[in-house]
Image (cartoon, rainbow, N blue to C red; front, side, top):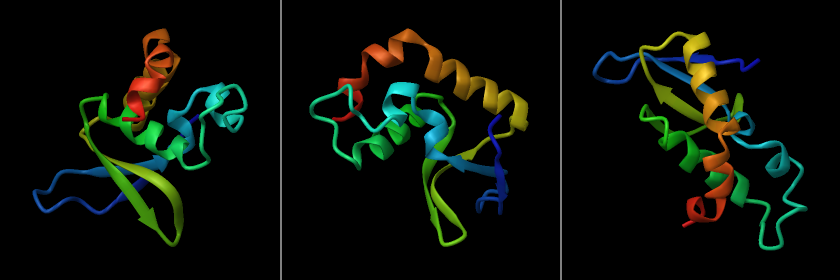
Length: 104
């Protein structure tokens, strides 16, 4: 289950939510990249951010003292719909196979 933090609305009045970037990584990527030779410690955040942009929602980096590395989404979807979209994206085999393309 993904826990979203409700953020202040953007200047246009659209609602925003944030979640930790680990929710956008596959199981192998969360291990620390031991399965990948060229995997650097900071690449996992790049992968998660690029993967979030594939959702079509307005997603950006979210850094805050009270919240670790996160990604904010500007969306009218409720938490369940956004969580389902993230889980479907991560589990799709197409995204796992294009991992090397996301690091560009």
